[in-house]
Amino acid sequence: MEEDYKLVVDNVHGIIKLYPLPYLIINTNIFKRLKDIMQLQATHEVFPTANHSRFEHSLGVMHLARKLCEKLGTSKEDTDMVEVAGLCHDLGHGPYSHLWERFVGDPRIENSGFKWEHEESSYEMLRLIMEEQPEIKEHISDHNLLFIKELICGGDKEKHEKGFYPYSARGPEKLYLYEVISNKQTGMDVDKMDYLLRDAKALKIKLKWELSRFLEAGEPKPLDFPYSNIDPTIVKRIAVREKVTKNIQQLFSDRVDLHANAYQHKMVKMFDLVSGDQAL
Image 1: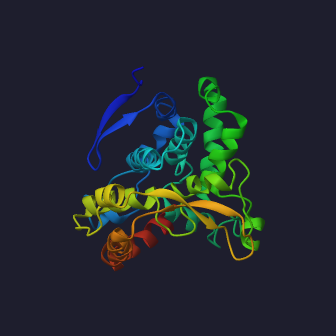
Image 2: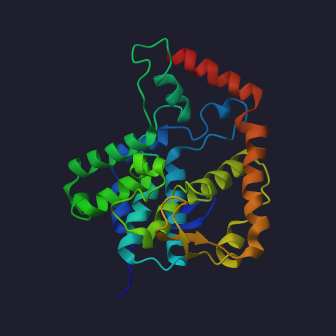
């Protein structure tokens, strides 16, 4: 049976497939607001082409989430839910992206001390989309909604801090699914992969890391490991072949270079401060 999807062109990944459930979510006003939220805050004031939004980044993470799940041999149901989590992982970002997180905690405003995280807000906004669009709700069971929440927000924080398996929606044999969008163990996840590729292209900074080498030569697959020194439960984590070790190291060295040359550029930080002051 022929799969049902639509095609869009992305300047980073080429052709991206939009399957029915993500397509429904994308075509809501709540999701489309991401078009007005800059991925790199005020960086475009210093680097004029760094004016891409959270919208295209979210589509890119969705795309890479599906590609990695397919490489890992994930079931259709799990792949679909991980894909939705990738699409919605940044749904809760406020104006100027991460700069907003500093703004809501600024001591000069009344809600000083209020703890706000875009991950929790992302989940709540997905729930709002489901309430406004019953058709979307029909595609996501309560159990899978919990799975999406854990993919975006993480599991039980108390269990995690104590070193015990923290997830409820999927068992230890599927821990690797929780490493696709936001990998708390290694930091090697599709969120980071997309924003590095997308930001570097906008900033015209050349990366040494190669996505295709990771996916093809790395042959990522789930392998057995004990969860922690405290919890000996055998879980499956994402593992790759040793020959792409250098490629993985380059991902993190590229991230350091982007911070040094753009994200933490002294003029960019000055514009961040000005933007925050103007907002107040």
